[in-house]
Image 1 (cartoon, rainbow, N blue to C red):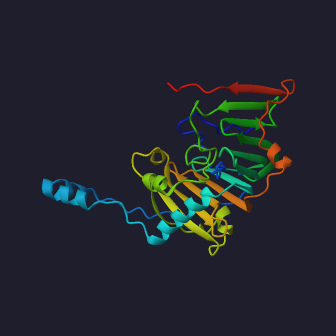
Image 2 (cartoon, one colour):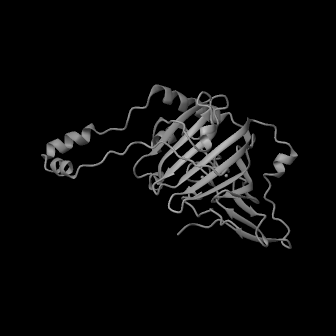
Image 3 (cartoon, rainbow, N blue to C red):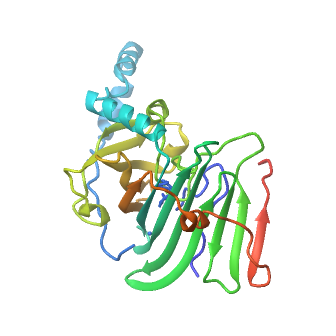
Length: 314
């Protein structure tokens, strides 16, 4: 049995991907056994002599240098893309997709891939956001097995359902305090990094944004560069994301304006990748689809059930 990645707030589940996350992202979200690499920004060596020389400059010089440091200017095309993504997210009633989620442990050289189905729905009357990530396959270092593990969020409670444990396990945690709301796809707050519905102002307040490039290898190398808009988000200092992530690359489909690929690099060089396929925007949710979003407690005679109500953090 693979150990759950659900962690306590405030960096809830940040050790996992999206998805989704995707919906985010949980998204997201896991996978296939292949190498995943990415082109990383060049890191120039620091000359210690230069550091000493700069430190001995007059105070006025140091102030001048500090005044020259400013956040990079955002290209107009990126501003326009963020505006469009925010507007399109406001119109989103839901989506479904096939999800592949890969985690790579750089220290151990261990690759874990999960795959399955993702459903995300916005209630048209209450604006309540619900999602389900239904993993059914697991690959660890090229060894594949059927493994049913589901994560379902109903707007207040997150259920982790493991069909493979003995006995089967049903854990339901209340994530939202009374009177508060919770965005399951917000970066750093969902089971996997799959940002949907993030406002432009929120993104720019927490990240420096630039254009990304598709990796040459791995899951996301399958994406068509002509059909996606790639963004790189670099966490700003003193944000929660800066404590864990070096950068996050997100690839938005140009037709649906939904993320179809996410690549996260952590400071420890671990990587998390989400690939979404067969994405359908604003589908009609039939009874079968709605049933997949249900977290009614199962039969206690067949399941080990753990219900954890919300309580203030110390």
